[in-house]
Image (tube, rainbow, N blue to C red; front, side, top):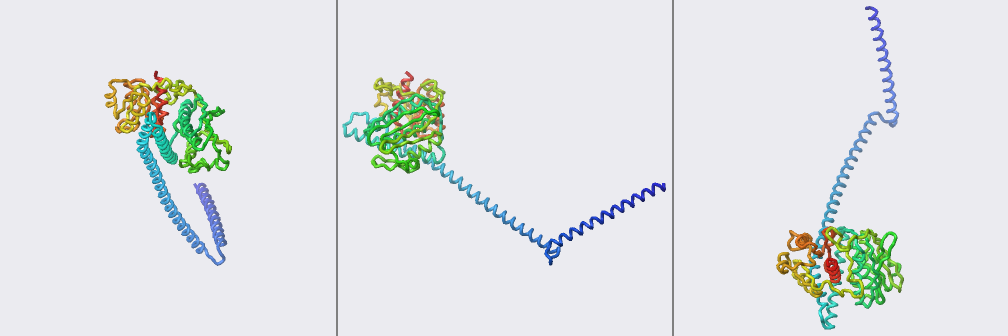
Length: 470
């Protein structure tokens, strides 16, 4: 027992010695730290002064932090105001676009009717002086159409609401109609149009590509005083190059980039043929960029200019005649081949139904189609149309997309009629350029024409549809 007590006392003594050594070491460390603090201060300062400086520094940090927070709050408020202003600007831009779309539709309705009446009047046997006046009216209406279309297109491009609806089609679908149209336009100016047809199948937005080539042709006619124009294609490794050439005065090198800017035109002497806003090539540049179709220009002063756009190839279209589910734009106008164009006119005696809620459009379509030898039945509703038809089966249906009855649009109405008359060829007519509408029309196996209607384009399409259905 005494032995155990002795061992315990020995352990306690050892522990006490260890604690004393640790205490001594800690005191030494504390003293060293105090000396370091003292040595870091100024000669006349004391530890309390260092403490005061620390407190002051902490206060400055707090004040600057508060100021930073206030700045961040102000920036957040500014950012919120900027976001609100941006949203307001976008809303205003969208409102402007919708307004322009609505106004263009309302303006295009009477303009469309006027062009229908003028085109129908041109087919009448009139005195030479009257015939010349009718021609002036038609050209003036076409100028109005071009200006209005240009303003609407540029606003839609600026607003970003014009989208491409690419699909395969035979390039002849586009170029045959343009060649026939501008052959007549060029003839009025004493020019000739040389057209080299092509059957290549490309992939693009038909309406937007037509806008590009049409602007090329319009410029060629406007600035060429004598000679001829060229419309043709050339196969390239990465696509089909559609070219429009002229024998005009040419474009100086410094102006070849500027003419693709807004409100810019080449300095030409023939001001009598320079009507326009200088937006045609600006629209070409924007549309070609959106479609990813490169545009090029070569020109020689005194010899002429050559504009071109490169369009990618596509797989061949299986059938030329459109059917439900097929591409309705892949038709080839047979009436354009040969010198005996329209010798056997399929429009003579054919029954065409027209549905439109505008009485002026109905009357204009009756006058125009009637002048082509068609038997026209026109009304604002299906029931009125069928009542006037006496059970007669229609060959082609022309229907306006925006009807007064908002419960059913032209595509839905046509689909309903096609269930009753299987295989009925249908053309939807609209002032709406939206890609979704063109896609919906194509997927429904129908054709789409934009207002104001171009009579020659309509006549060619009707002839092709009737020939394909024969």
